[in-house]
Amino acid sequence: MASALRCNSCSAFNFVFMLYMVIERLKEGAAPEIYRRLRTKGRMMPEGLEYISSWINLDFKICWQLMQTEDFALFDRWIDNWRDLMDFEIVPVRTSADAVERMSAKL
Image (cartoon, rainbow, N blue to C red; front, side, top):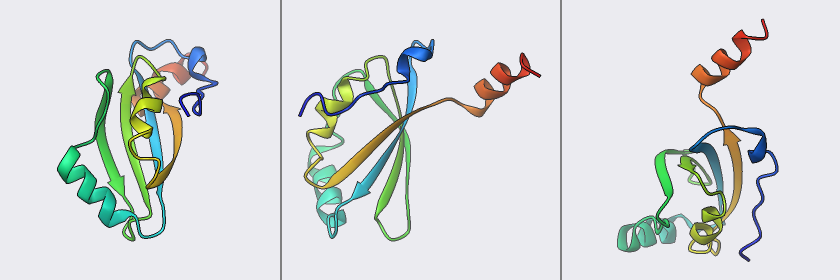
C-alpha cells in the first residue's frame, strides 16, 4: 500500500527537513514481537528518514516518535516493515521555538 499515507498540509510549510510526530498504536499483544524485530533487524528505516526520539506509554499500547525527512513518501517504505504489528498516524509538527518565532510577527 505505497500510497496509503498522505501529508495534505506539508506543502504549506517551508522546511528543508520537515519534522513529524509519528503516533503508533500497537496491535493487541504485539509489543514483544515489535521489540524482538527491533532487536534483530533494527528500525528498518530507508535512507533519508531520520529517527530523532521516541516515547511509549506505560502499558505499551501507544508510541510517539519524532522523525524528520525531506521526502514524506519514505514513510510508506518504513511502515511496510511494521504495519502487521501497529497502525500509524503521521502529523507534521514544528518546534516550540519555531512556533514562538512565527507567532511573534502576528502579536
